[in-house]
Image 1 (cartoon, helix red, strand yellow):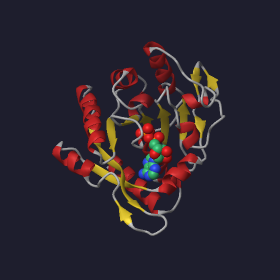
Image 2: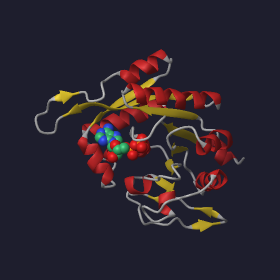
Image 3: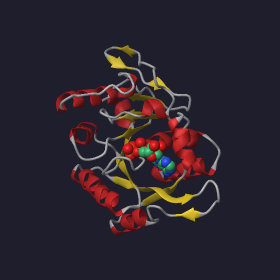
Image 4: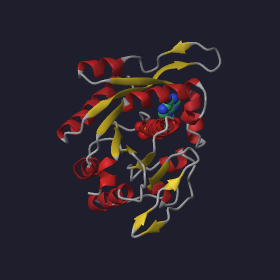
Length: 249
Ligand code: ADP
């Protein structure tokens, strides 16, 4: 292992199930860390369902390669990244078995990351081959767990937590996503998924609570358009900056 690689901190972002906002958090966390002055790269380890090329406005860009390694694609937000989304056409199905998926992950991880001090890794949901390769071969310095306040998502999050514990990966803490909804029309606040469930669960499990992000239509709209809200100056950006500060603390 080179000194450069040893000094690099891999931060894995995981969740027990899909659709809880893990990719959105990974993208915004990386952008927020870059805004805080960190040299940070992003790996989209969701090999079967990549989304980071879209989230960081790099769709259609193909990574260059030298010495049999890829060069990360530069995004407009100060975060270089690599995703299968840069290697296959949007919507193209990837039907690979475990070993090929592991190889693909290794190529994304072992790319020319240059002076990146932190690599944020957007893991696929669940506890399969990709997670095992990530934990055993790349040994993240820590893991961030995302959950909605729903009980079911929390039960799934518990499974993701035990995966990291079994792999002896330190848990940095938990983020509660989609907590509380502010109606864009009347401003009324409601709680479609409840509020505080992830925070309570984090306390029960003795995990640091890293912060919460409300269910906010602007986050969804801007994400779909490839503009991570963490790059902007609204309260959404502040929420992600605070989470980034907590992760880096
Ligand atoms: P996952 O990676 O866990 O599958 P995504 O990050 O792809 O989840 O998010 C699923 C959907 O929810 C996306 O359409 C995304 O834009 C949206 N989303 C994520 N977080 C929020 C939020 N805090 N408010 C509103 N929409 C969100």
